[in-house]
Length: 282
Image (cartoon, rainbow, N blue to C red; front, side, top):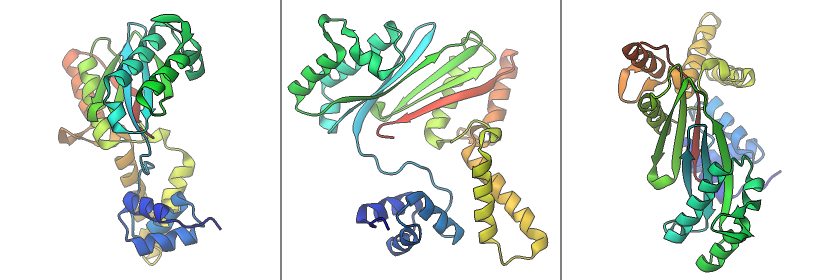
C-alpha cells in the first residue's frame, strides 16, 4: 500500500474540511488515493463534493494576448513569488506571449524553438536560460493555449490575483459583446464550475454521484430513495455546471438566465459555448 504521509492528510483535510484523524482513516481505506479517499468520506456523509484543486506547488503568472483572429494564454512559473514580481521575469513572459501570438505558434515546444525577436541569434529557450542566470531561479513556461476566434462570438477575459488566475469565456451569438462575456468570466473565476452544461457531465461521474447518494440514504424507505438520489444528482449539477449555477451578482437567476436576459436586450440569442479557467500551478 502507498505510504500515507502528513502532506496527503493535510491536502485531504484542505479539500474536504474533515478532521485529520478521519482523513487518515479514509486514506488508509483508499490505499493512499486521495480522490478515492474523498469518495470514502462522502459515502460516510462527512464531506461534500470537492474540487480537484489540491495544493498549489508553484508560483507563477498567467497572461493573455489577442488579435482579431486569435487569443493566446501562457502560464510561466518560477520558484518564488519574489521572482514572479520581478520586472525582468514579467518582461520575459510578455515577450513569450507576444511571440506566441504573432508567430501563430500553438505548441509549447514550437514556441521555445522560435528565434527571440529581439535577438534572432538565440532561441526563446536560450533567452529563458539567460533570465534564469540573471534571477537565480528555475523558470519554466508551463503551458500555452491558442484559441481561434469565431466571427459570431464574443470573448470575455478576466484576470484575478495579480495574474495567478485567468478566465476566458466564449459567448456565441453576437460579435463585440465582450462585456457580457467578461461578466460570465468573473462568475467562472469565483464559482469554478467544471462543465458548461449538464450534458457535458460524463456518465461515469453521474453514476458515481448516484452511488454515493445511495450510500448516504441506504437506511431510508425504498419508495423515497430514488427521489432523494435524483435530488442529490441535481444538486451536484447545480453546483458544478456553469449554466445551472446561481449568477454570482444576482442569485435570483442562473447564469443561463442571465445570458438569455442580456441577449434579449440586444436582440440576439446568446449562449455560453465554452470557458478556460487557469490557475497557477493547476
